[in-house]
Image (cartoon, rainbow, N blue to C red; front, side, top):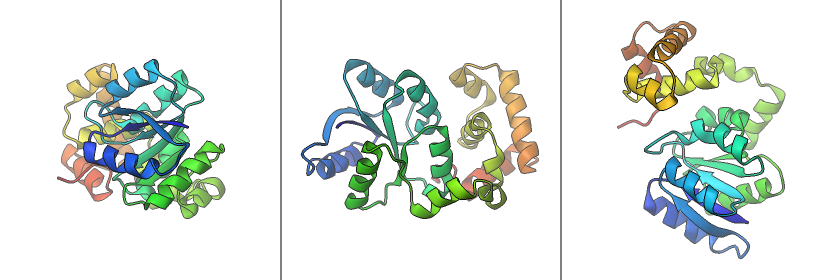
Length: 211
């Protein structure tokens, strides 16, 4: 299996390469520190699985899942992130990812996840996978942001990272009015009155990195 590692921290990529090198049939054939680099690697060679971080300098890995699946339908995606799996795993799977691992995962779990995905399965912690399959509405009660659409969730995270509406519009290739409308809907759904409250909500729910 040919694997591409996408993470903007070289030390993380080196650690993963060391773990994967112990499996004779798992070959790290490409590395990328951004979505732009990943796109270039995917166009250059045959890759079977991408290990993809959420926080990347040019675009969120989470928000890139659908783009990858549209262009490379057979490509497997294993999210590998510092964010807690209970916050992002179910949404990532729903968006098209084949698995989700926290960066706190043990080497054996990383290999197990890749093997399960290789066989056509999905990988996340059993408790989360069971909830996704048998009780998909449960998380809507536990976390208000689960009712947001994928685009609303994307805009929420970008706003919480301190991006202005004009910048978000430019990055997403949408109008500023459209982004402003998304912001209004997000605040209505979450019962939030201000941008400051929105940022605090995202931080309190581990939806953005804490600096």
